[in-house]
Length: 338
Image (cartoon, rainbow, N blue to C red; front, top):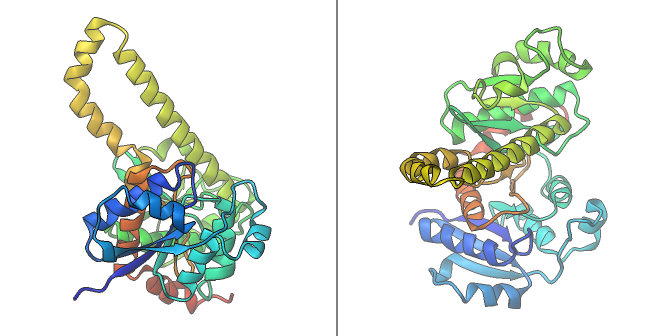
């Protein structure tokens, strides 16, 4: 019998919880027989939502967690005070090896704090980065870090590059992934103090395929597989990416509906347009893993619908199967102090 991958899912986190979260979990177990999902949240509410779906009973289990960490709450205080919240209960399941991973669309701050404080860092990892896949012309790139460490040091960025390379090579199957650092120009002498300090370290790092600087305009073209930056820059890139994508989509749709001729044209281009738009839909790629922890923590968008939740759960299977944490331990664990 194949080993079950156990995924804890925060049923109470996100704008569309618990309905979309529960639906995403049900869709995931329908796709894979090797997944066991623990839906964590207020039992009666989750049970009521789950009753609307049909699924293989043994693959989903409800874990009661009466408390919920709200988005506006101070993360450190919330993690400390709300021991029975869905996020804390899920994190503890990962810490105690009762689950291989946790997926949550809840408070970003609480997930980042919980990941570090409860699940804990792999020995040698200085700062765990949040690393989402972003769509590009050539497929996807990993943006690392996009929200966990706004005041990173050069040594952190080198580790981000190493962990990002391991992830892309093993989860996405990209051989010798190209690593670039976000900069305001291609020249080596360009950039702020952090970039100038980090550039030569990446250039001389034997574990990665460093290709130099990348300007923001070249990111959508897929010029690098791993995009390295500190979290302030990464978060701005990610949010602008999502905003421009959503605006372009709404403008194209509006333009196609303007006249009878454009409506006829829309019918003709619809299949090709749908395929292109799908490739630029963030929900197709699951959530952002917090790399470098002793277990897998995946943060999905607060606005996540069922599809993104499903893809995030499936993503946990690949992460576990490819032994990403073990590879990070071997690459980083032995060569740096905590």
